[in-house]
Image (tube, rainbow over all chains, first blue to last red; front, side, top):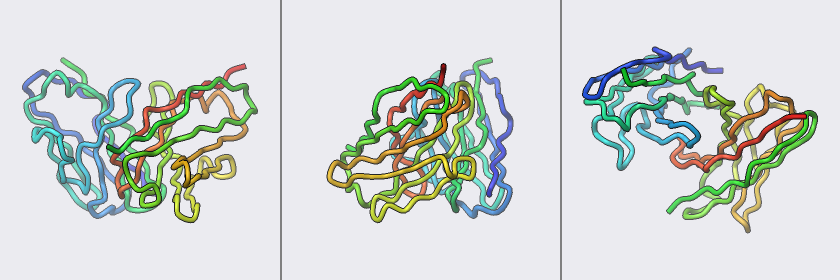
Length: 107
Length: 116
């Protein structure tokens, strides 16, 4: 099974900052990676798929990059609404596992 | 618009079974697989399995094999998941979600509480 490891687990930042979250896969997933944002008690929201394609309606402040085993999610000019938990998920093959999440807190 | 509407929360005793429904609308039901994902309190998302409404084939994560059954009913556009032999560790918010390779739409979640 493919394992995804996100880092950091927790990230503190201020409004206006730029932050980067990393997701590493235990084997190559080519570009079959999605990023989600989740707020407490709510379902996740799709941000990007195929590592770097922005979902319709998602702010261009979000961007993704990477291929193979290493991927990054970058958020530019943090806004108050961005403070949430972020997950990566691969969809190369079953089981479609998630990373353990990165909680983005206000500093 | 695409919507996935899940059944309401339930409280179950240890050892019992639970069945959750997920009714789809706004897209062709048989064109998309449906995922089941859960999230225990304060924990990460955990992938449970995937259901193909055309033919009924399933894929289940190793941790749930032998304990999960996923089914569907095309006329009502509804997918179901049943989890058996519940323990307190199954207390979680359970989500269904539409598969497009990645997941693009999610249900609102169903809270299952296992307690004696």
